[in-house]
Length: 379
Image (cartoon, rainbow, N blue to C red):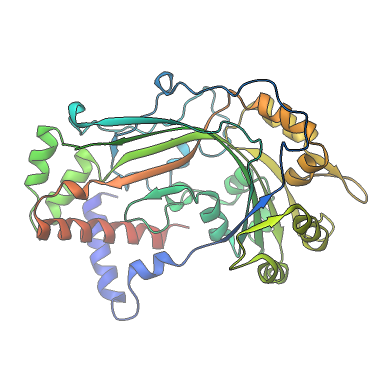
């Protein structure tokens, strides 16, 4: 479907629902609760003698500053950005085609090294009422200006079997009205960003100057040729995560205990929560532990070692396994030294380069309406 046809559909849809609710309001209402668990990872373990490596971003294909039409493949970006474990060979990070729209002399590029370790990092625990909130939680560190639900850029194409594969849980719990708890441990390796007095290249600048307020065709033509957004910042690293599927009643109990207003919990709090609400014999399903990079050696270690003994069997458990056996952390660090995934993304709109305020407002309205329709209609 072309952008022009989509825009006509948008106008019809917005006219139809204008009296009841705006597209923007409908698209906005998704937010999971997050708490941080300071489990003291690394504190009780044998001090590590090896130094954590610095990441040489110059050796990676990181297209910071590249522009793209965000709507061309809305919902399909998990195919071109390494954000979930995939079977694709190679160490690619982002293979989405981007356009170089900025004058190279106007770009100031900044590389920042991260901690590049799981040691002493807090576990991120998200309480998700439904599947949409689970998606939102996983992509909490991904932002796109003007997009209220940026997770849909990646998950809009996910059908139940694919979502189950990426999340490490069975298709049945995704379609049975479950709520979820997402546990995530992130190793931030480095980030690259651009700033400065950015200037468009002459051809892109001339095309943007042809945009006038009320001229929808000119906006769409510019977006199709030069993009709607550009990659302002990319964060790379590794993320290890696990999903627990719970009943809505269990979710409400968890929310009362560690919901709104609670920012951090300690190891004792977690032990109580686990025994009362998240033990394998209590939840609908204990999901597999996954590594976002999809690295085979790392995933094999996770499958074999990050388990705990339950009443009748062994079960995968990211938090409990590392708390009970701190020596596993060092091996996890070693195996993830060279693995890589995109753990955060910041996409900025090209709206800032529209000089005339009235035209900029029209540009915004066109792009915002476009994005709202996609957000409402993709899962």
